[in-house]
Length: 258
View 1: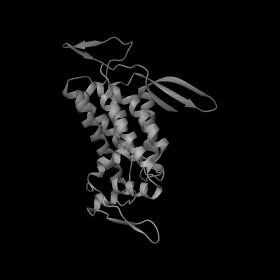
View 2 (view 1 turned 135 degrees about the vertical axis):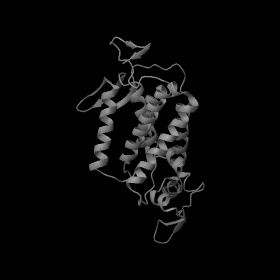
View 3 (view 1 turned 30 degrees about the vertical axis):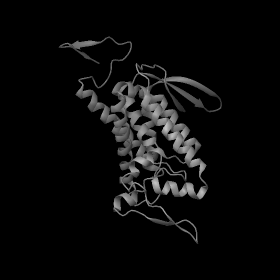
View 4 (view 1 turned 180 degrees about the horizontal axis):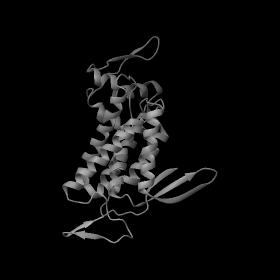
């Protein structure tokens, strides 16, 4: 089951930031792909987020990748900067394709609601929260974390509280291939529960170029995005749960109740 985005598009503005993020991720990935295997591995070690490096306060400067060779893996911008740089690295074609499909499918409506600048800040904060959630689970890991999926999970969390009743186009691949429309609250709720389950009883290793998945980065990003959007809605005095289509709106003291 692959969510393909919103069937009930409500955007009033063009998602410039979402498109820009996709283009940056694509350019970085093309550069990664242009490197040889060894240089690509070094690039990820330098710019990926290594939990043990962050929690120990000691920046890793060298790594022995072969029996005869030790290479420089010092992060060019410093350890804390890898919280940002790691969000724009990916471990393979499927990794980036699915991430960008999710970002394009759901990011536009969130950007439209927050505005371009606030959305960019929101996206980065969700990514940072996602990374720290995974670091908290596996603080001693020396495997670099890469990928935009933590930040994109934050976008999904925000989308859920903004448009829980919107219909999502979902591609189902089983014996046959078909597309159906399912309410966002069911699709994204099921996705979150599945990620939490896999993170709790399955692999806890970080999302890396080696194929591991940072499930708790997904969970942490989703929760962070949901909470940040909830706070935003409270600050602008908007109901946390939007009006459900097909139901009459009730008012109390001039305010709509949903």
